[in-house]
Every structure is written in structure tokens, then in C-alpha cells.
Image (cartoon, rainbow, N blue to C red; front, top):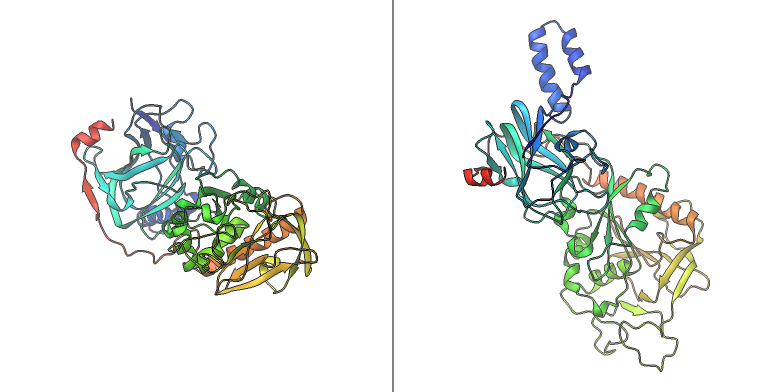
Length: 464
């Protein structure tokens, strides 16, 4: 059964007051209405859904709270077989140019979210047309802004969902804007990417935990994902992330399915987003830059010394060099563990305020043997250290690869200083290089009802 819910009409009092104070009352009201629409999302008259659970009504996705996952603050469909829909009635014909959506019922992972979907429009609530630019076959992002090639006129707007990433779909917030090139402000957010060979994200929280301890970043939001799902399309979609973090990893690089790193290599080559990688993630950046995913990878235990496959990657050493050890077995490896002396060799904003020598946590037996082309050494080992390459930066970018772990315990003050510096540097970089979390006024040229396809009557009936 459909649930028809009334949502409080949003009023823009400053604009209305300005209209009343002007001389030509009739014209002023018209100006006020247009201005109100241009300043923020369009107000909903009613919203409804194909079904809802009792604590998560359709109105939860239209309450102005973008991120809450609490009861009543998002829409979640009833546990039934799809397709599903969430639908808005504006009460009159309006121009629709852009849609902001926040999906899923988890703060950091894309769970219970629409996977395959398309936005649809209707003038009468009976004949529905697909907005083809919004069609997604396999959604991976919690946050997305759809911008139409041109504004369309409609009274009703519907999110038609055919599959989900798990249980029935959940949507935290929907905002609709009248112009395709609408400036849509969105808070700073980050991606935390797992470098593990299997699709797991259990260590991604460490970066967010540290970032939220830094002054001014306590409300920072993030999406966790596996590196195999990371690519330029993910990064470039609006709203763009401020920066990306890569975790460490456990398997040796000869054991890894290198094809899963192809998307990361393309983002790395592009260099348009700020990134910070630690330990295994940093080693991956080095291998991707020096060897690439097209060629096989090896490790020192299986390497032909006369014909190395990925020579940039090595090990600190073996406890017993005469003992033959299989790949992936590390009981004979020499490690570098715990707070370790490091030395700054090049001034860099990520290490601003630190002395030339400082401590940061380590936990590794692998290392990079040399710098890949186009990278500069920023931090090297200090007195008693084992690994020469401790932090490198890709020239002309805001991309860092660090062997140490600022996200691990052991040196809270220094770790927090480096994280604070990097966040500030990444934010400045993203603003300067087009990675803003909103779109400018010249993103699209205006047009009228375009890129829509009629929906068959039986499809609509199936979603009731």
C-alpha cells in the first residue's frame, strides 16, 4: 500500500519580505518565487513511497537532514520484493534541473541502497518518463548529484529502483533543484579505500577516527570502499571528495590480483584528486607508477634476480637469509614496528610545524627500493631506521605515499599534526583544481524537456 505523507512547505522568509517591501507587489512576488527556487532546493508538497517501514517513512528522505541514519530521518522500504519507488509531488509544474541524493542506511558504507535505478518525471502522476542521464546500473556512491542536460517541466518526480545493495532500499535525503547548473553546496567529505586484495573495508575507519580528532574536522564524513571499486568515474562524479586515503594491506604483491588496481592507476596518473596512502597502499602507488597493472608483479621470495617483474618492491630483509621461505609467509622476515625515527628531507605543507626529526608508527616488512619517475622524497629514515623511502610525493600533485602509519596508535600528537596539515592542504588543492564539492554556474547550458523516455504502463503498475 502506498504511503502518502505531507511534508512541511519550505519558506524563504528573507526573499518574501524583500518582495513585500518593493513597489510593484505583483511583480515582486514573481521575482521572489524565482529567487527562492534559485537559492535552494525546491519545496515538496507531498512525498510517498511504494512501501515504508514504520520507523523510516517516506518523509524521512525530505526532512532537510542529509546524513542522519536515525529513526524517522530516512526512508527505508518495507522488506518486500521490488521494484520500489520514492516519489515527490511539487503541487504544481516546476522546472527540474538537478537532483542531490544521499543513499543508504549507514554512515560510511553503501548498504541497503538503490543499486540499479532511474529517476522518472511526470506531469500528471500517470504517464512517467525516464530521465536517462540519471540511470544507474550499479551505484557505488552514497552521495551523488545528477545534472540533466536541460531543465524539464514536471509536477512529479520518482526514484524508480529495480535492485539494491542488500536489503530493501534506504534513502537518507533527496534535494531537487530547478537549474542544471545550480550551485549545490556540500560539506567536505573524504573516501577511505581498502588496499586489501579481498573486498573488505574493516581498517578504513582509522583515517576518519584520526581526522575527527583534528581541530575543525570533528564532523567530517566519509565513504569507505574497496580499491577494486575505485576509479576515475567514482572520483569525478559530484559531489567530489576532498581527498582519498588508502590503507595498508597484508598479502605480498606477487599474490595480488593486479587487475583490481587498474582504476586506481588511472586516478593516480590523472593526479587531479588529493590522496594519502600508507604502507601497502604506498607500495601499490609505487608499483603502479613504476610497473603498472599491465605487467606481472613479483616479490623478493619468488623473483628471478636477472629478470625482476616489479623491482621497485622489496623486503627489509630476512632473519635467516639461508632459509627458503614461501611467498606470503612472513615468519622469517625482518619488520619495522612501532614509533620509528624519521627525518624530513624536503619542506612540505603536510609536515608543517614538525621538527626535522620526529617519530611515527611503522608496521611493515615490505618497502620501496627506489623512487618511481616523477616522485620526490619528502621523508626518509632517521637514526636506527630500516627503510629509506618513508614518504614520497608525486610531483605537481597533492598525492603522498607514506611507509609509516599516521592512522595507527603510538604518536598521537605528531599523527594529528600530519593529518591536520594534509587535510588543509587537500582542501586548498581541491578548491584550486576544480575539486569543489559544488558545481559552478557554467556547468551546463539551459535547455527544455530533453533526454526523457516514456515508461510503459505495465512498468508503472509493477511498482505500485
